Length: 166
Image (cartoon, rainbow, N blue to C red; front, side, top):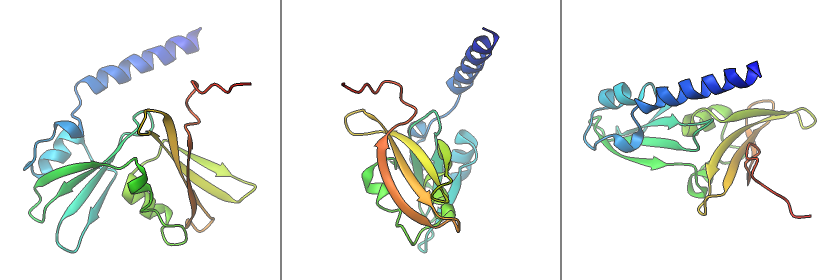
């Protein structure tokens, strides 16, 4: 009973905290990088490119199901965002080439990290909704050196709504 009240209290406090928060969808084009960071907080990571442009990565995981790339031109002006929890962006992760740090740089913090002791591997799990609204998970598995060994998309293990027909 007490545990239930504590969980409810935490959920209410979290919801109230989110009401006043900015969201990537509310950032106006042309805003400076400093303005975006002031509005959204510190990003999970920053990717810089040879042409001087950059991307700030904002993960809404674990309870949100999205990761945003906030794009900036070479002058540091916001030019648009990309939602990255989709097949197009998942294909950017290349087994044998990318590392745990590369994946974090691309997608930020995950919903949960898993350990697969029998395989001597770990995995990041990112939650997302597919094109038809199904609760899904994107998995990136790493060997002991932190190199990506494989990726997969499955049903979201946190989703209690999946019913299996007997």
